[in-house]
Length: 254
Image (tube, rainbow, N blue to C red; front, side):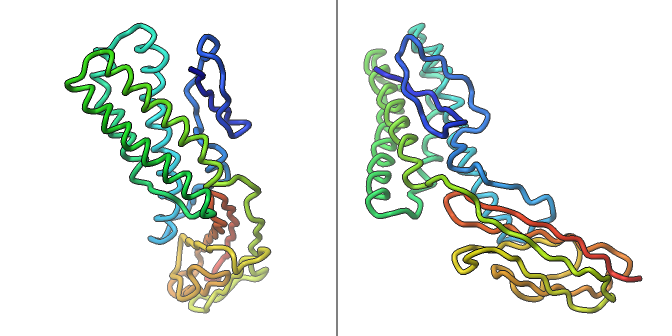
């Protein structure tokens, strides 16, 4: 049975023969899916934090499952160490269920249908494996584990069809050239092509956003910020894990 190596540079799983397979722990599993994710270094607002956390959750859940699966596939199984597979079964199923819980993302209908079918097969394989790990023979345990492994590969192969890769959006943020008086309103606009197709997530280190969260332009209240620096960041999200960020700093007069 062929195995898959995830190639983070190519962004795909590459099939290799069983004898030649030697999969190293991926430091960025599903790079194609999340290659453009950037962390907000400023204190994020609730909505910005929620989206950023979701992106990293997707990446994390696939990585965590792979981290448990890898040693079972390349150490326990070749050594017929079924005791180890049984011991790790609960964690593997838990990690797998976390992937199932992510659901089916927005994508073209045909792609969604195929991905949903693969996700359902993966879920069923996890349930069967959990049962066999508790009461099944070693032979049935091995078979159910193989089904989990193969269904995960299938699911991973379909990830690029529902989270297609591509270039992140281009964005710039123009800062005022002059300092502002404390108490004045600061308006900033993110410049990017096709803004109507993007989601704008603003975060500020000082001050308060009065209006515009989620849009290309925000208004900030600078009351009580005399002599301070306002740091602003905007992340634009194009979906499918593709995002870009711009930052700006504005000094308030004392």
